[in-house]
Amino acid sequence: MKIAIGSDHAGFEYKEAIKNKLTEWGYEVEDFGTDSAEPCDYPDFIYPAARAVANGKCDRGIVLGGSGNGEAMVADKVAGIRCGLCWNLESAELSRKHNNANMLSLGQRLVSKDLALRIVKLWLKTPFDGGRHERRIEKIENPTAPA
Image (cartoon, rainbow, N blue to C red; front, side, top):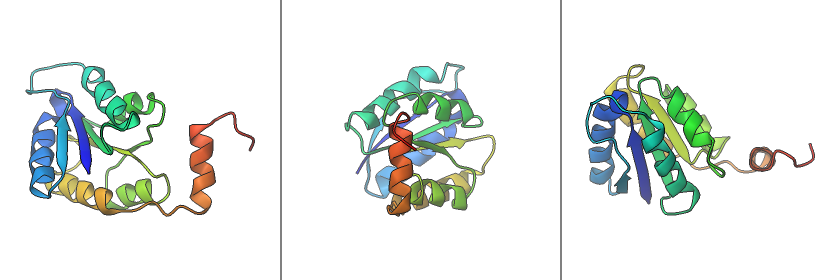
C-alpha cells in the first residue's frame, strides 16, 4: 500500500515520525512536504497529497497540522476524498469502518506522538464495513443523488 503524507510546519515533527514508522511497517510513502518546521501554508502540501489519493497514485493519505482541522478541510475539497479528522482510536476506527475514509488528518498539538502512531496503525488496518454505510458514501460522493 502506498501512503501519501503531507503537513505544514505545525505537523512536521509527527509527519517525520509517522513516515519513518510507515516505512518500518512495510508501507511505501510519498512525502509531499513540508520539509522543515519553518512557517508555511498547509494547502500547498495538502492539496497535492489529496490529489495523489484521488487519482489513484497513492492508496491512502495522512495529513498533519497543529489541529488537523484546516488540513482535513483542504483534503475534503478534492473530489473523491473522505478525510477523517481523528483524535483518538475510536474516531480513527469509525472513520474507516463507517466512512471508508481514504485520508486521515491529525493535530500535532492535540494528541501525543505515541497516540498519533497508534491511530495511524489502527486506521491503516481497519477495513470498511460496507453494508448500510455504502449508500451513505454514495451520498457523500454524489450530493445530488436522491435521498
